[in-house]
Length: 493
RNA sequence: GCACCGAUGGCGAAGUGGCUAACGCGCUGGUCUGCAAAACCAGUAUUCGUGGGUUCAAUUCCCACUCGGUGCUCCA
Image 1 (tube, rainbow, N blue to C red):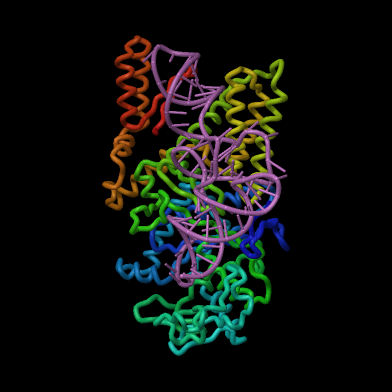
Image 2 (image 1 turned 60 degrees about the vertical axis):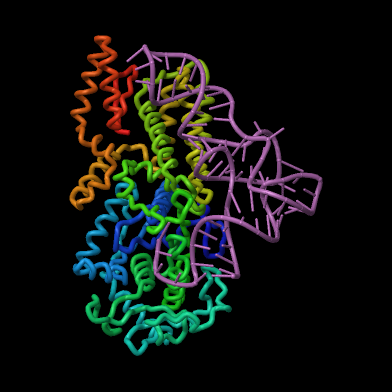
């Protein structure tokens, strides 16, 4: 597996060192609100990487943190009049529901900042004992960047032109140098705090990742991931703290996922193009299509999220699922006079291309293309009657491989959308749901089955007017009927 | 303002110093169907933001410009 390493700026082999499993850490969510699709693009690509590593036979131990105390949480919880634990519990639950909906596998360990405070304190004390951390008059602790000469090695920034004290935050006037960052924030009245050897206060943001990564994975880890924005200062600060404390390299490999645009513009609330997963589900988009779209553009490219491309993804997945069903259903002849060997070759080629593409810095676009090449060739052979049982089995193997990473073939979409509707109802936000979605889901599966059966009867009686009326009526409600030689099937659009 | 990244067909998007510029969606025509849908077949960029340069050869390398993005401050 070759993966671009931000540290050093080139593609390098990703592999475990000093342990049988790949030890990876990802900066997880700050649970102060619902996650937006940009957040999930990062976690989705990390999921793709993890799934693929396992496919290559590399066991993975993945730790993701949940930041459950920080400035925004304190502010929002106060505004909501709730204790922070109650406030964050709601959004953490939502985050994992959304992750599940998007097919993101849970990490082996979920580390909460508030349950690892003693580990952070120990680390800060260690830094303080060597005067790398210092306390200011208000009781806060800061990291002395002057003591870490390699500062900036990840983001390759030139700090020469940045003068100390040039942009001093009003809160931070006591720092020795402008770039020194907070390890521990002194307690303030009304804010959640912990009384520790460092005094009363709460952890700074950067220290939590260092402490938790090292606690669960050891002082040197194989891979550290996050969104591109975290590169500086967050990851730079993590390196400074961790390496100063341990004297060892912190993470060997750093992966950063680029931001996405929405309709060609930066996603922001003021642009009106800011979307959470739930917003999209309520608009009638499918979870699987969102997953597929967000991972179809390789992680190092800026991707443009558009509603047209979401429709594209929906249709593309439908084609893959139809194909998958077709392969499983058969029946396929045991053998044919010719063609079997060349199909075997084409299928094998798809498999090789798929694996090579992902192994090449996670080129999901090329991996996807290899699968569609196979779909076309195999569908064509199936129509011509030259696809054998052996070929179909080979195809299913490749599809399983593909789906082990892409995870879009199993259709849980209706269930997920139903859950989103239930959530919207509970939150009093059902008015945000698309009207078509409501009419669609107002019909139960049994209702639809009954109408479909009635249409089949009408067709038998050659009453096409009635049959078409039922079909059109269902179509208007977002339900599509398809006739085939083996009967009728329907699906929600 | 300074630094960095990107610009490929109707849309999304891969890729390469030189064979016919992947793949998906869409669209058009055909096969199938009572009609559709699904599936398949065929067609759909002499061309890779603009202008220059290097080279036998550039979409691919270099420079400038335009536009978009990111960092410099909390942010996936």
